[in-house]
Image 1 (cartoon, rainbow, N blue to C red):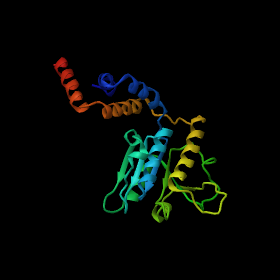
Image 2: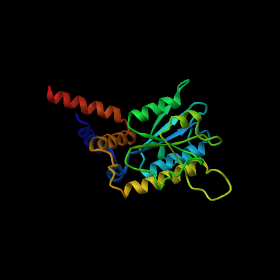
Image 3: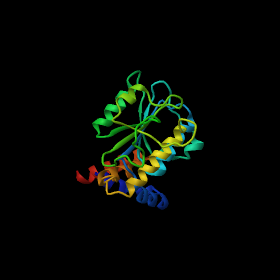
Image 4: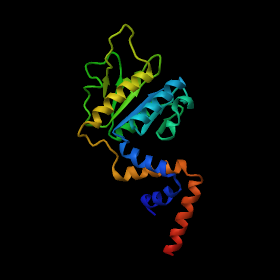
Length: 227
């Protein structure tokens, strides 16, 4: 049974309204842009970035937990964490480099925000390659290890006396600006057909009660028919 066939069967147990949302929102999701959070420890900041990613159609987030455990506040996320895929790196050591290597292997350019970066900004950064935008801890920013292994740094323009934006505000400014530019560009940012089907199937599994049991039933029925 293909994922397309499985989704057709499973989606019969999804409400008409939710199924219509899947059809409308899945084509608006992207993996051309992803988000990396390194050692974020304030739950409201972590939650705000998840919500921003969901609202902008960014499907994946990468969470590095070297010293601080990543937690979300459901009053802030408002359910958005259910629809965004979070990839966690939380082994005893080496989480930052594990994340960086994985993303580079997948073709991402590692971009770290820094108030001391040169002229590249969210409004001018090239959109042609997939990019992973990295945001560091609230007090000290990205680690030296992450900065040293980044492909480039990006600066958010500021015109006040303080040196930096709040982490959740930084993420919102960067991601909104880049996603608006991307949607108005000719860059192929949308998910390919196979990934689109996989995503809708994953969403259906999250809302259908006993989805695993139903899938097993569908597959068993198919085997009986083929036998």
